[in-house]
Length: 493
View (tube, rainbow, N blue to C red):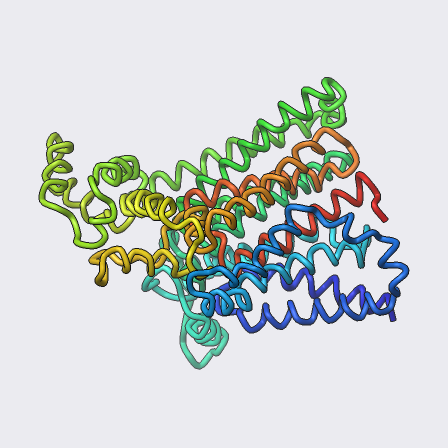
């Protein structure tokens, strides 16, 4: 019975991880979360109180996580809008606490029989795999000439059924490669965050394969990293492209500073047992450069990105801009700054003040409001929108739901205490992974924990990622990675 419960829990855990980033799966992911919690409860009742007490659960629980959970539970008591805060506690914040419990509980329940980094990478790659498959289907003409960047599942199903039905007369014909195609999910962020997370897990799998001297798996991990990166390029997700590159660069720097510097020639010998294995990293680097070059060529937004950022900093009063629109003075300054280029270029930059340039304006306006809201508002994703409407005393001309900056949005929602505790937790996980990088025991888990913590910390500076299903993704995986690292290096139970 225990074996069956453990196996069901393991597969549900992987399925939950696989569907977490997918759009329109709220009911399904809540169902998986409920099933996982019930299975944990059944297991806990089975092992008995004495066994659980012997595991020293409170001692094993990281203090920053404990403080973060207590803060979320108490926040409605002092929130400006306590009723809304309570709803959000029951919603996104409460679900994230439960996901932390599942991630840590999985380690207690399964121990070393739990999913390894390869299994986690495979589950995380599920959405990326669907995207690449749909891209191939679009390329060979299954969907005909594409209209828009995404297709509904009903459209995908109808097109697929038409091609297998001989009476439809549908035929495949090669199309131009569908650059910008996002599969079934119009939100490229869902795909981008998942691809970057999968790259982290594949780097950990790469480390594990190197330790075991399994060259085929080394090549598998390298190929998987390339495919994940290619997926973000196809989807025209510039943030995912940049941060995936940043993760890879961070892995190289960490290797040079922590592993190679600590082990010297021994670390090189472990990888060089077969001479042709040394071609893996150079070849992977060349392919990444080629794929990134394609992104620069196919996505015209790269070419004006820096100028859009400059324009965002040229807005004199970012709050007034959102409330009342662009002032004549600011518009004149922008046109004067780019007077050496065609007037249409300045027009495009001004138009993009609701795009790339607008993100800078939002960040600046958000920082102003952070200084004015030490206690936060109501814990909701609409905190920025509500506070800006209050500042304007009317519906803003440029109305945005959030600041597109995770740390600012979290501070406005939960106050200074909330954002500081969240930062403390993320830095704690980052440092824990970093300190364990030089050890052979638990090396894959250390790499995954360090890189994934770094990714989410850095990604928060460019997008609002600490909300909704992203919170569950972060909690589930970071909790599990931390627990497995602790299990492999300190053997707490």
